[in-house]
Length: 140
Image 1 (cartoon, rainbow, N blue to C red):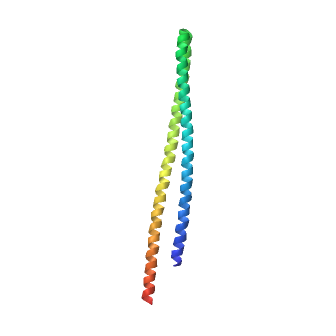
Image 2: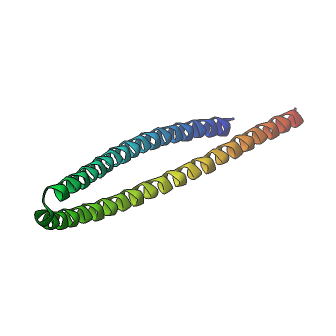
Image 3: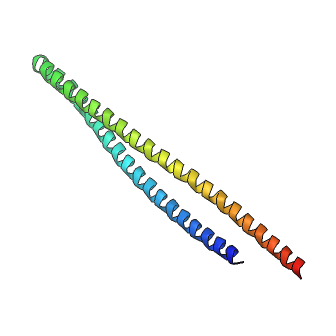
């Protein structure tokens, strides 16, 4: 009976620990989502700025063929640099999110394994209690 009480307390402690881990995981996932959303919004703003620059190029072409050619080359080089930086940053974000998602999946799998162990421990405790009761009955 004392072992049963100890197993129940242990199970309650493990369950509380799992709930804490789950809450921490949910908070971390929300933080990751906020970061990704923020970075996505910045990427959209850069894309809009690129489009505005491209529109300005069209206007420049109408104003001056000669000056525009030089300006367009400089602006195009700038856009290519910005685009390469944006692609590199997006790739880094993707790796970061993928890594954190993989960690979250591993935590979820560990939680399931621990919960399965709790179920088994509870069953063993119940079996032990039944056996103890049968032995006590046999002794009487």
